[in-house]
Length: 135
Image 1 (tube, one colour):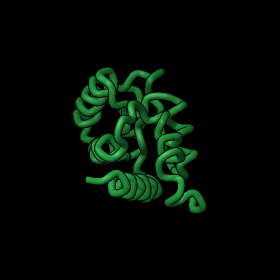
Image 2: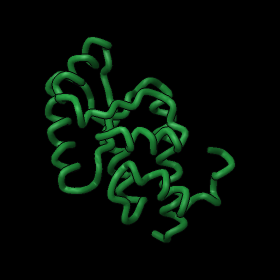
Image 3: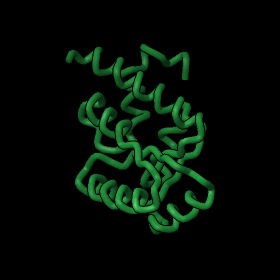
């Protein structure tokens, strides 16, 4: 797949992420810089940073609020993959669906991206000409 095709696909993934989040599906991230990056990309719905809170506490609150699905966006390094596995186990044990497709697709189309906090700058640097006026 050519570079421009990858970038176009990345933009489509981010637009779909914005849409799903706007429907009330929370996004789970590691830290506050991840939240800031997603906000700069125009994502306005619920984004939950969980690095400073035990996973089970986040799950308990979401269960109380009737949340049935979340979008998982942990970093792409070894620690992020391990964290993702722990999150999936805990959330799915409480019957909360964990959507990992956005994480997978961002990793696929944002070549070389290491973490979510860098996503906004990656998009600005590589895709700005496609949508800078829209965001």
